[in-house]
Image 1 (cartoon, one colour):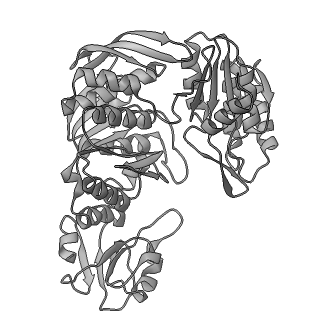
Image 2 (cartoon, helix red, strand yellow; image 1 turned 120 degrees about the vertical axis):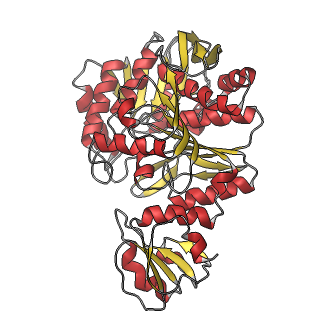
Image 3 (spheres, helix red, strand yellow; image 1 turned 45 degrees about the horizontal axis):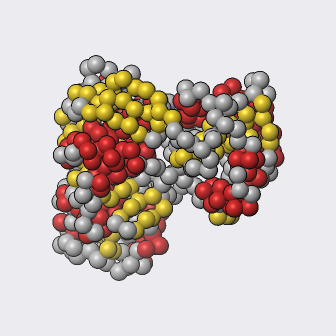
Length: 487
């Protein structure tokens, strides 16, 4: 592809060399540089691509895109830009033929609810006959191909590569999670979202290598609404006005507020044999009853968001109702039917904020006992262990402390830290370091009316110990436990 085509939407200066050149490949990893490649020098948290300028030239790279000065032979074309990450997004979009323009692209941002909402949207749209690609925290889905995720929002080159593959596979739409980091690092630059969604915001991701403070976090979330045609936002969030500062899109709102364009009314809890759910009436832009097999107020928000999105695709009420009733998200309040006497679920809640939200919601169903099984990751903050221990001790009737991803720490040392937090409460607990044994204990000691939560692992299918990941999926463990000793 001609270099001028790749640079068409960019502000740049040609520092040396010629613009009249052909590019054979676009790379941002120095190990992949080759003859006639364009190499983008990215400044990362760990490494700076500018340091590899000479190395990639020796491998044959003929064009460098930089934001800092580099010294390379004069025949090499050097393109200087204000921000090489932003440049990479625009160059990648051009390299893959602007695939976002061939599909409807939905971007969902917020502290909580992104993952569940993406799967709800995918379920509804596919039920209505659409072919939908997905990019998110758990995986990317392109037709029949499933690619495990490394980041919630991948690098811009990967995003555009996925878009191109989705368009090639016949997808007419794509739904993706858009993290604040992804927005801050311009991973979603270079195209316009058809729909931009805001679920909610709470203080999170603040610290080194993330956001300097809450205002910065809000600002980054708000960038989505300068890059979409229509914004669909949570009317109930107290920080909404700040998130929307400077927005350039049309707006629609959802929530419980009377002012919301799409509202949830008349909520009531639904309990079945081994299942929990919630029902409500959607009013405003659409008007029909909704029932979902996912518990809690946050499930109402997630489903209401999905309805607000799918309305733009002309999906029928019947299709929406059917898809929402059947929708399940791996590791997000995922109910596993083992008994009609009690409810067992797997959830990714892996910090105090998410665990408190989950357990508070489940208490509303008035279980005989609320049983919470969890561990904490090794080589991470001890504060998280104390806080999670305190939350579970306060809200659960029984806590089963076990191992999560101990990494390079001893599981017992992590358990001992969690016990410090539980010790601040009157909560009862047992400790069983082996996670399979702990789950077996929870299942075989289940009482009628119990709600049992396996927290922390969610969609993960491994356990990380001493630098190695071992296969471990809680769904498999449950099957093994019941095969070895049926209820």
